[in-house]
Image (tube, rainbow, N blue to C red; front, side, top):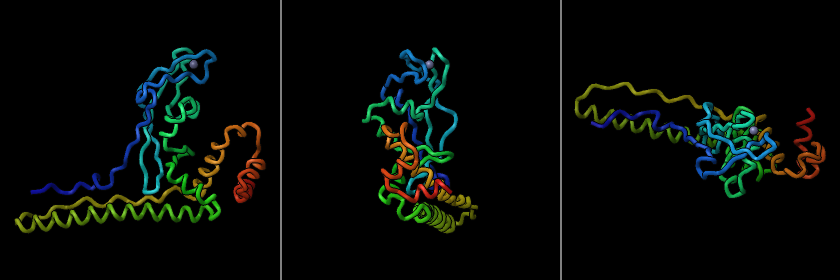
Length: 217
Ligand SMILES: [Zn+2]
């Protein structure tokens, strides 16, 4: 008889392992030391990050590096590490890091295409809708498999089993997070200007007046 459906296999989350040094044997340098010192690997960083994408969440795991000279430690998604990579490798890191949650580039692109004109609230609504849609899809698949399992047991006269309950649905982080991610994205795309400009100038360039207003509140 077929095994009882395992709820975790329906609701599992992807894991993205980001290890540029190991994946492409890339010689990362210590961003602190003046001399060019190659970083050593210290293995996988113990903390994983939660990444919000269009369908739900996934995990980001990273490599930990140490400088043999200054003993400084650096995580592989640190900007100072990412910026050492050539463009062709840098673009393979599909995540923007903001606070507690990180954002998949899919969500960032959705923000860019809207230039935040429709406000972060409606973006939040849309992303929440997509997340709950995906959750429902998985829930339907799991529950219908449980139902089939139950019927086949009944036919064979085998007693019922108890099925694991559905995991809770988690809303994506709030509107403020979307706004912060958007600002971080605009900011990161203006590396040349970063050191020179203030918010006012930035916003003239990007003409997103709404951000100015929200930053001033
Ligand atoms: Zn160093």
